[in-house]
Length: 605
Image (cartoon, rainbow, N blue to C red; front, side, top):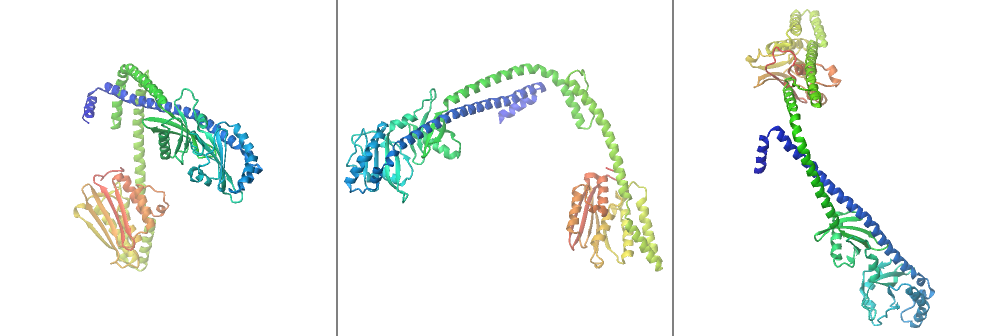
């Protein structure tokens, strides 16, 4: 941490040219590292894939060769199994020795004929569930005292219904023999029960199978291993093959890979394994080879790549360093000009030449400044004209239904010769009209807005015959505070129109207007105790507020009061205005909005 802080201070004290020099070094290290790592990775990958491709072909070849050999060995004795004497021998009881001897004399020449073509076969053994034993060989003799009933491998083979190749083992039933053999066990099934009634076992010399596994791939340090996964049996000429296969199996189970190639570690070395199944058995043919040769080649390539990259970096820095001085100066001036532009100050960048890319860039930047200044003036003037036009349109809107209904009410009172009511209504309408159309740039005082609201409530009283209990909680010092004209009355009209029901008494419906001075804004609250606003209308109002007065909802084409008022507030105060609405069914509605100080006697924001 201390070293990082120290280096940071040193870099901060450097000039821009040296900072770029250091930055160029740091930036170059990243692609160099990526290139080095990528070259190492792809070379290692291509090498292992190439090796896997060759090894896969070789493993498939060994697997096919061994499978073909076992199949040919099996077929060479097929003539025995179709011989009539052999079939009779299968069903002959163990105590009928004469019948057994006669049958053996007939099928034995067939067995020996097959044996003479396979000198690698130590002998063939027949055993069955009846207790009969038959052994034939050109090389060995059967130990007549040996008990096959106690021999577990042969006894367990009766549970199989398919040919099986066992692991190499000693043949204890042969006299004077110490040789190991692979047993190729061919079960003989009872056609009626489907169970294995006898075993025909071909004893193959261990050397024969191992010779087929011996690697003849010159120049490669690897080996072919015959591996039985279920029995954890390994067949190989290498003494460390068993430990190698244990690590191979563990890695294969951990990776859960279905591919036929695998990289794993055994001891302190990395290995590549390619394997294939031996058809018709649970054996696998596995080719394993250490990755030391591949790793050495990749490591040398990696080192050479780093050396070339380092040399290229040094050469590039030597060439780039003097060029930086010529480039940085005009760029630095351009940077200062752009910083000034960010602060809203248009400062053209001086040019000493304009015949290169940097000069063209600076010249374009200066031209852009001129265009920006012109466009800014045009946009500002257009926005001002548009806002003034919209504000005047919104301020000039008067609800014609309210005016027509008021005139009809005056007419009805005139017909009844109620001159006092007619006079009050005419005076109220007159004062409201003068207030609405007077030339005052859309601004008024809080006191005048309250007077307009009282005139509105007077007309409402004559129209409905019921007085609305309205309470105004306004501090006297706030009455002269300038506000936007007609910014409160639409909320009063909305509360009476949608919150007051003719079935409600004057005491049940209470209307309150509160005005409170905050630190930086004036808070205005209009609340009532009426029926409240339905949820769908409340959602529309909140969407209007969230959209900053912008909405395409057709609802506001007919209900323009709140929409127009909020639009005018947004035009005058901008994002500084805050409006919220809360409503509970049968408990009333509450509108609350805040307007900032300092906007009096001003046009659109």
